[in-house]
Image 1 (spheres, rainbow, N blue to C red):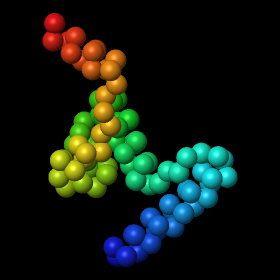
Image 2 (image 1 turned 180 degrees about the horizontal axis):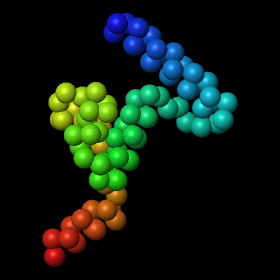
Image 3 (image 1 turned 135 degrees about the horizontal axis):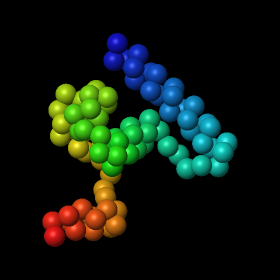
Image 4 (image 1 turned 90 degrees about the horizontal axis):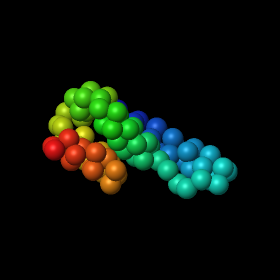
Length: 83
């Protein structure tokens, strides 16, 4: 079963590469899509448990590695909540 999944991911990534090249976009992959998905949901304050479940992670530390960093404006906003 794992081999089938890897084959599907490989095929999907090849097709994405074909499309992005035709559109003049930078290379992206399913890996990039998963990270963007997790980061966007995290910034929308979606519970981490939901994000972990939707990505199929049994361990939350794996999910935390998917979140992108916060912008300077977001850090200022969140830190100002302490005042």
